[in-house]
Image 1 (tube, rainbow, N blue to C red):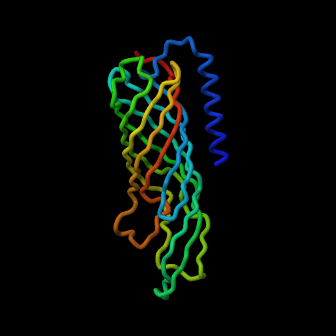
Image 2 (image 1 turned 90 degrees about the horizontal axis):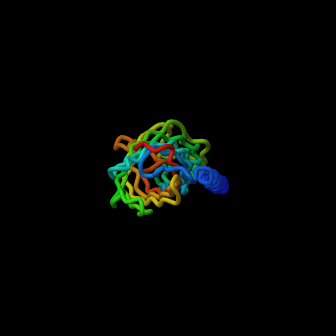
Image 3 (image 1 turned 30 degrees about the vertical axis):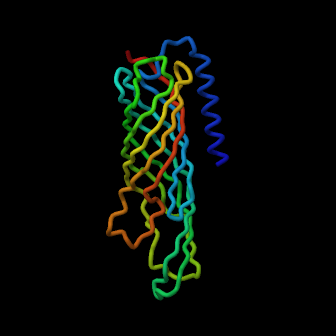
Length: 223
């Protein structure tokens, strides 16, 4: 958490410095390409600790209509997890499983739609809805696992570094200068590796709600 807080503070200072340098520019944040950083929290539940993430984002705001979209490359920190099952050899014996999975790298495409008029430059804040698709490029493999008592569990932890997902969410953008916009998003992410044939597995990356905050910086004017 300390590392994530430091990254957020560093990002804010970087963009504040950039704003000071380009204050006289005629960029309009809602019409052009942008890049930025975001930080968030995966609220996995299901015995998995809430897990922080950071991401680089890059996209485009259409400006003259309400649609905008972006890509993000997100790193999610390692997670601890725990669950209970029964012994493989004796179903009357409870076995407590605890472990840790690696961090993961995710590539995601996001499509968003403003719920208010984005043509009026005097309006600083805009709500929006979003949908996204994603693929995990690397990570979420088990690092360590312990059993109490030391018995083979009937339910095993799902081991796969790659999966995909979709999500729906809602958020709010707030323009703080001609080039910088703060935004926040909350939603629910559906992980697609949890088919019925895997019912005997425990998933350390279950479908879950999430929250994100970030800042985007206008790259150029595309009028």
